[in-house]
Image (cartoon, rainbow, N blue to C red; front, side):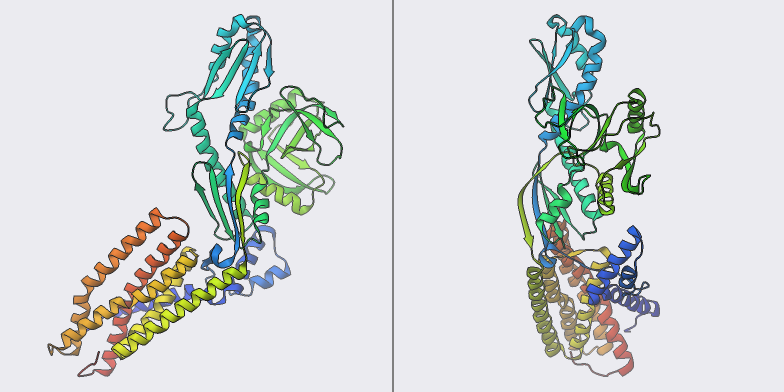
Length: 553
């Protein structure tokens, strides 16, 4: 007999209602979007009357997840950046100089004096005054080598040391360069993602392309220049010893030193040691705050390693100035008054509250390990995205109307049941997209249009099978039951192959291809559910009430 248990009926309608409720925020997109933005702003920096009004525009007990609109629908910015990985080689060599100097200093009687020489980028060249001690010097410097931390470089050292006359030349090994490149790219990807997430943009696309390039697409950003401002600020914080102070930008710094301008004092320059005592990489927290005079500032805290180095240096250099450098500008150069233990401090300057907040965000996100060249930049206006949305709506609407008309004129009342299930199918699809926070792009809209056409395939198989069973005069109830049972294998086979295709597209593809795969895969799941269970339940309910002796499919 044609029967469905009560618990199954309750479960089917509960799933349908849950899917429609999850999809409902998309009918009030701008209102819910403002509500979500206001809630995030209140959590981040406190409530204001305006934010509270925007947050109240959507009931807090209702779902507020939306289907995010991709770059091609919402408008936004597109950048292709090339990471200058060679910068990291130079930084590594600069940081190695103090260790090399300290390891050779106790052997002065053997190697003589040690002087840093002008070096090519990516190498460290040091001259010893006693060439006869070169063998001992090379032995000591090679002791600084560390094993390469990578699968491909296992068993090799990170540096190569060679003697050239009176010079010791240190370079990164080839295995270490490959490992460094990989770490640099991964770190750049993570930092860019954290910076973009901090400013509240939605569903950015941040992907590695090739060996040293990063693709960045951010919907909702006004221009590529705005996106570059978010990403391009390196926020490289260092604490460096001060050699001297001058008003001449052309002052000769000397080997191992550099001349940097003061941020607050125009015309003032500082000669600093290139090798920093502590870097921003050793920060564990940075928060906007106020100094003792009530001016905006940024408080910071180091990890144990940074705290130890910071404390040791301040204890040994009381009375000497100490420069705080941000992006190659000296923002402060206070004199060390006492031993600073605990690894905490405060950065003061002529900051506004907004500048202090942004600086804290950048410091928390971390410094980019290397500079970037922007090879390609595009701004996609929201009007282009709106045109895409309207075109997508038109295509979906036309496909939807034609399918509804075909099903009604071909299968009559049973076609109406299929049409209701198709409408519910679209709602369930958007509910699932909202639940997982998926991003909808133009290919995604194509996946929805394709799903509309494919959604009735299962119903067509079922209805045609019911027609065949009616010809054997088994009675309408038995014909409907057999129609569903015998069409099930064909429905599963047809949709399983499509699901496999969607999975392959998702795994092997990227960006828009993945968006198409997600909408296609979810559409198949919801269409099979509505065809096998929802239409069957509607037919059962209708049959129980009417008890027809004959049916026309």
